[in-house]
Image (tube, rainbow, N blue to C red; front, side):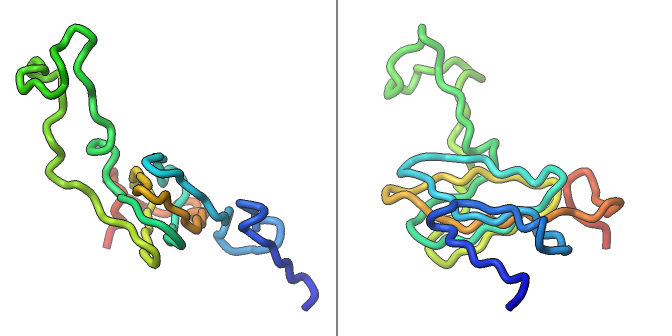
Length: 145
């Protein structure tokens, strides 16, 4: 098998296949989030494909994952009157998508998500794909029909 490369992603973490492959695959790797840890994945100029290999977590829009907290002069957090209007975000309407082993997530160009690991942490395979130059997209990241 000339030209074949075998890489142990559990030992190496991530690799750049660009030196071997002519296709759009630009990065592959195995990522791990510790319990409760979050990371934002943004498809800015590239697209992403994720596949949960172990553990569990949640994928949610960044605006739901980033919560403002009351300022230092506010009352205790369990006090219903602790936030001035506009100082705390309301509970998010969409709590996100549960991620478990075997779940795949695809982020087309122009989209983003926040991944948050559950109580046992989460491991996922992450592929980054180049987007051909001149590929049309709308401002919300959706390709025209």
